[in-house]
Amino acid sequence: AQSVSQHNHHVILSEAASLELGCNYSYGGTVNLFWYVQYPGQHLQLLLKYFSGDPLVKGIKGFEAEFIKSKFSFNLRKPSVQWSDTAEYFCAVNVDLFSGGYNKLIFGAGTRLAVHP
Amino acid sequence: DTGVSQDPRHKITKRGQNVTFRCDPISEHNRLYWYRQTLGQGPEFLTYFQNEAQLEKSRLLSDRFSAERPKGSFSTLEIQRTEQGDSAMYLCASTPSSGEQFFGPGTRLTVL
Image 1 (cartoon, helix red, strand yellow):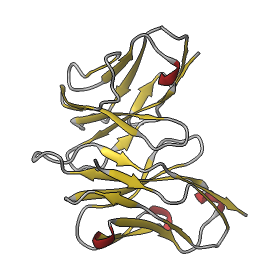
Image 2 (tube, rainbow over the protein chains, first blue to last red):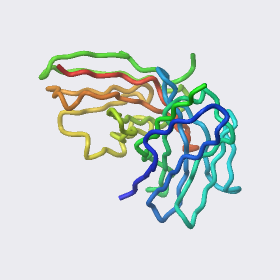
Image 3 (cartoon, chains in turn cyan, yellow):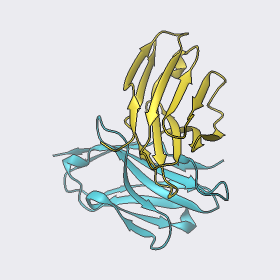
């Protein structure tokens, strides 16, 4: 069965520190990859996505992620975090289960990031 | 607001009661998904509609759960004879065929 692993459940950083959140998935076929963010009291929002092409994708708010197919990884990075980045981050994979297109998202357990001023 | 909406936002019920949640997707999106999220976990897939057809159901969706999307627009998720283990956030998402899913705010269910 397909699965997504996020290695860090809780991360605490000071402002201006660099961030890297790990994400690995288990599926050998074609995938779309996503990072979603959930700010306190808000709903899930898309941070960035990878469908094809350049494996380094840039998202909103200075976030980027790199797809490394050989490692089944899609790590999220940000060079300098801000207090407003405090949130929960979810990696997700969308597998092509049917010839008609892509279906359900499979999420990791999430990483709770706290950024201190 | 033209995003995905869900109603109610919070529901407290007693064990054994039935509850129904509603999701209104983004109007031009033909695919609609239901997920469940418990504390400390990521959302887990429950079921999926393309237009009015329910195309996939998770094993998480026991016989007490039923979902409909009668006209291919809004959807309802009903839980019969609720149990304490049903307490969770129920999320709805919609998408056109591109694969990116847009999530609603969720309905938080508490079963006492």
